[in-house]
Length: 271
Image 1 (cartoon, one colour):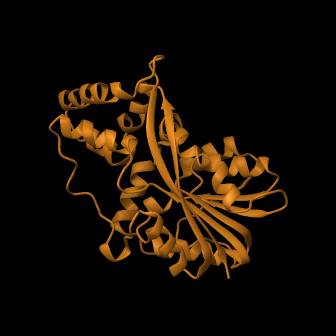
Image 2 (tube, helix red, strand yellow):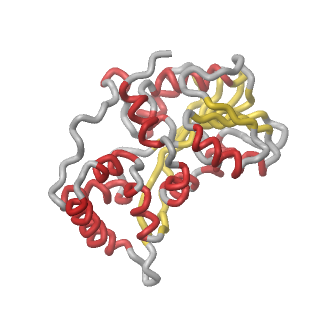
Image 3 (cartoon, helix red, strand yellow):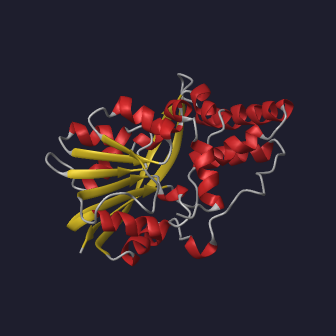
């Protein structure tokens, strides 16, 4: 299997960071879990695969519904967390778009914020389509563009501190990219041969402790985490100061952040 620079970079951003992810971005990414499972028709007796399970959040929710759950992730540290959080799931270390399961092996396939992190989203969706039986359901979430305020906050803090985002990061090849909109995600699923494609935008306010929310990038998670790691201590402190200033507008009376955000949720049926 060919590993692109983009794939290798993405894996490096998550390696060994499961605990930091759970404390920060993990809570954010958990929000659509129930809606994702509803869209995929996950219920008791259904066999479902959770692709890119991370710490097992979606897998655990599927187990609570009485489903038979298989969960895969490319990062061993994430699988260790999933083993704790979803002890009834069958776990495998595996990487899109080549997963070690027969065609039509599942009633449903779900991928929560996974397509944001693969070099070939169309190939990833085609693999999800391959895994489900005829009339099986596929459901995915991604972050949209333009970015909601929550996602913009990090870039605004870096820019306000006079720091440029690293220019040498691997980028998704233009021929593999797609519009991160309802129409763009719908088109991606339809192009994979899925039918009855639907997409909606989920909007909510993510509540977080300001320190916990800073903790993710401070531990190297995501592009912003890489930008922080590359800076000397004085510059990181300057970015932190701007983060405190810009995030103040989102603080409740109890000092917690209430950050407006959104995600795209799409589901479809295998023919």
